Image (cartoon, rainbow, N blue to C red; front, top):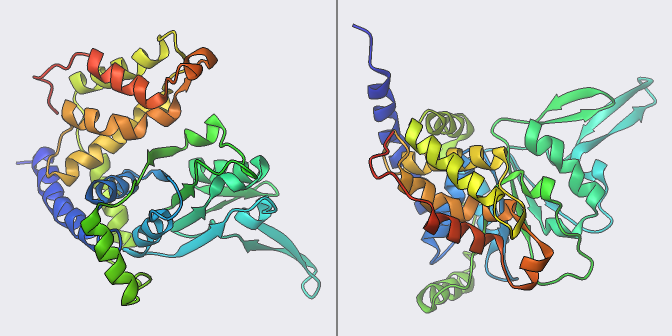
Amino acid sequence: MAADPDDAIRQQVGGFQNEFEKLVSNVEHVMKGKPDVVRLAITCMLADGHLLIEDVPGVGKTSLARALAETIDGSLQRIQFTPDLLPTDVTGVQIYNQGENTFEFHEGPVFANVVVADEINRASPKTQAALLEVMEEHQVTVDGEPRPVPDPFIVLATQNPIELDGTYELPEAQLDRFLMRLHIGYPDAVAEMEILDQHEKRWDRTELAPVVNTARFAQMTRIADRVHVGPLVKEYLVTLSNATRIRPDVRIGVSPRGTISLANASRAWAASNGRHFVAPDDIRLMAPHVLPHRIVVTPEAELRGVTGNAVINEVLSQTPVDETARG
């Protein structure tokens, strides 16, 4: 008798949930008082997506990015984005070898499992664009030759939304490549006391021991990808995306890539909760973190203070949910 594929995925998500909790616990050694942010960030990574962390200085954007990178046993590269950074500083460059009379390719920092892109909006649009192909295609093309980056490959980018001098706003095409955009916010008083204690004992830059290796992490992303999305849940996904496109205060609504990203994030979130299927509540929980940065409101709506977050919150409140929808 053939094995039931549903039974196999049920067993796999059980192990997935246990390892997810270990990943969360490990990162929380560094990221104090932000359990929701940590869970969302790890969900983004396990959905095989790139993460944009946006907030004011000093709240731990870079610390979170480093902790996420260190908790998986993979290669890590950090790029400090500055106005004079060149595209080849990101992707790599061909250098002539006089002894061999040939050109040799010297890999840039994107050839790593985890790339931490600090203050990505400080680089020129041309340099920002150098990330587009590699974020989408997982490869760099140099002189017509494609060069694949390692698997898994995740970009964890940070940006400061309040210092606008010397910065370049990320274009919509690049924002759409980030599966999630997260805001960290200030810690509460208890967490800030722990941060102070940690700093006094010089633990704040202690490297984390990895919880999983890259091979197992890649397996976990494949398990998440197998979580079932039923027809009614797919219909709900499409209805939400379409609702953003027909609003008069929206110039650019959620793209099909955005719909796919929301489905992928919801799969990983469901697996992290030990389920082999996506429920409407998973969609509703993930939508405020996956969709708002993909929406461009009209200039008139922007003057009225309308944001992508407000649009998504309103769409969620106005779109009925079929409570019988299950995987």
